[in-house]
Amino acid sequence: SQTIHQWPATLVQPVGSPLSLECTVEGTSNPNLYWYRQAAGRGLQLLFYSVGIGQISSEVPQNLSASRPQDRQFILSSKKLLLSDSGFYLCAWRSVYGYTFGSGTRLTVV
Amino acid sequence: GNSVTQMEGPVTLSEEAFLTINCTYTATGYPSLFWYVQYPGEGLQLLLKATKADDKGSNKGFEATYRKETTSFHLEKGSVQVSDSAVYFCALDRGSTLGRLYFGRGTQLTVWP
Image 1 (tube, rainbow over the protein chains, first blue to last red):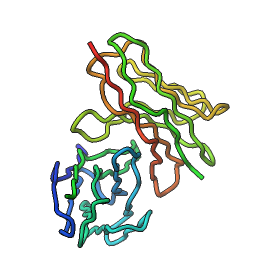
Image 2 (cartoon, rainbow over the protein chains, first blue to last red; image 1 turned 135 degrees about the horizontal axis):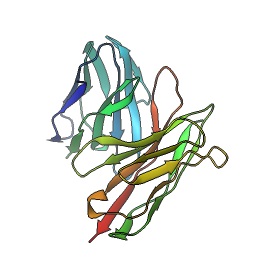
Image 3 (cartoon, rainbow over the protein chains, first blue to last red; image 1 turned 90 degrees about the vertical axis):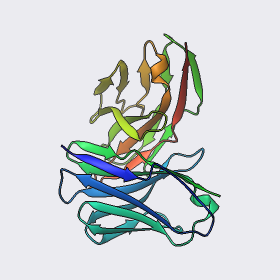
Image 4 (cartoon, each protein chain N blue to C red; image 1 turned 120 degrees about the vertical axis):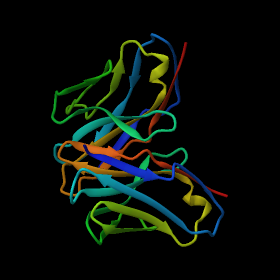
């Protein structure tokens, strides 16, 4: 079966600290992968997408970066977190049947 | 451009009340339309979808009809339950190779017993 794993579920980090969120998928190969963010009071915004290993595209300029070191691994990172990076981060992948979302990471920057 | 405009929340209803959450869209071409639900502490789950005009998506008592003439995809349920309390997102997919979704801002629904 096709599943998506995302961790951690919650995270509290101080301003200026680094960030690494990981997402892995199982049961598929060469998926399109996506990172979305839901900031407080706002809708889901696409941050990054990847169509293959090492291929990353950014939708909006920001304090974050993404990497895809393996076919089924997608990582969201920051060198120095800002307060405005707080939000709910969702990883997703797309198949011919539609989208599957991870369970999300609630990030609070303090 | 492509966008989704969704009814502002929060929406508070009593159990067994009728629910409507409005969603309108702007898109080029012929997008697919979706409703996603996010229960407390969980990620998004697909609730229903419609891929062409006049299609009706339905699931768990929820329905939405793809209306191209009014560019709408309103979510309805005849009798809500406490367990329906969640955040509901309307979304569209233009069908591009990128495959990105455009989301509305989400509507918080709270159902009281």
